[in-house]
Amino acid sequence: MPIIWNMRTVPGRLFYASLVHLHLSKFFSEMCYSKRKACLVVIILTTGMCMWMLCKQRNHLPLMITSKNLYCNKGSASAAITPLKDGRTFIVSPYFDTRDNILRVLAIIHHKEVKELYCLLCCGSNTSYHSAMAIIDLHSDRFGFPYGTADLLCSIPENCDAKYVSILPFPKGDIEQMPTFKIKNREPTALSADFTVCISTMFGNYNNALQFIQSMEMYKLLGAQKVIIYKTNCSQLMEKLLQYYITEGTVEVISWPIKDYLNTSSKWHYSMDAKDIGYYGQITALNDCVYRNMYTSKYVLLNDLDEIILPFKHWNWATMMERLQQQNPNHGVFLFENHIFPVTVSTSDFNILSWRNVPGVNILQHIYREPDRPNFFNGRKIILNPRIVYQTSVHSVLKPSNANLKVSNDIAIVFHCRGPYQAHLPKQSLIRDATIWKYSSLLIRNVNHVLNETMFSQVVTKQEGYSGSKAVVR
Image 1 (spheres, rainbow, N blue to C red):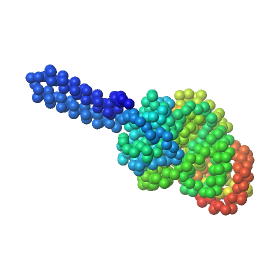
Image 2 (tube, rainbow, N blue to C red; image 1 turned 30 degrees about the horizontal axis):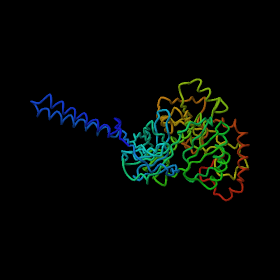
Image 3 (cartoon, one colour; image 1 turned 45 degrees about the vertical axis):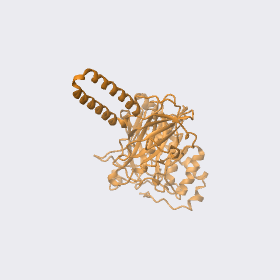
């Protein structure tokens, strides 16, 4: 097969640079016959400058090679996280981005030690492959940890209908031994959900069963058709509950074995816990969830299991978002302020006898929220249109940054039922907010249905009680 030199490639530019050098040499030789020494100096300087510019741009120039191919028929990797042989790169998933007609491979990389990566695209004919140097776009929110989320951007030629890709830490090598990944979002699909909730990540042998059921049922009451959970580990009891919701069609569980490869932190910043990556790779999981649902869900919510975006003026997310979009037609990312409802302060209401043996927190008993802390960052959680988002963090979208809109607290807040931030405050200093109670009758009915369907009373006797903070009735 003849080689076509492309000016966007390193070999192509070297080829054309050599032609330019040849013509310049001939030009100076003819024009400066009597001043050959001076012309020689000019030629050497010109050549050196060209070579320096090529080397300087090397990290930004894709390397393209077309050749015979033997690897296209391999099976594709199916794990959520796949390490490369360099030990510093971990591939999550490749997504075709129709907005830019480019391949975007989500990965976790070491921010200093990974300098070059290459995409090896298996073209549709199964007779050739396309190799390109990836542009490495490291996300800005790394919070000091050595490893962070990165987009590996690879161009796809018009004559290459790529369905699979491999990522290489070197331009040449034994490609037969490299993992192959199926490119997602390659085929157009119709929207199948209005709201999808992305939960990242479930870790710490999670066993807060009652609050988990209540959160799932609240999400459904508010309008969610799908909940995607990135799971590192949980209790056996939680495995049973997850299976119930998987069978129901509400939950999809993505196994997230990040602890097998990196020393993970449960903190958000490196200064708090000097590990490899923060919060079990939460940011990577959230970005994967956005791209996973890019063309299947109208809206995607990014929040934790102990958080519920709770409307004040509307019954559900659909009517709330319809109103917000009418008022803000140029925005597609909506940020809702976080408010702590501490589990250490309770009411005696809704002390339901049949729930007492269920490990976990009963959110209906926690209607007192902490006031805002002066001079502290108050995090927000997100409802977004995934088709306008390129990169997201936990509390806001990174690209495009101008898409973020802070929603007023009189429209909705994040009901965050967890341990206190301000444990020193007495109950009278908290704000009574019983908005969650407007869903109480439906929530109680639905929770009881889940407990009956899972034969929970038989299972819970074999489990240890909830190890988190217990609510104190006052």
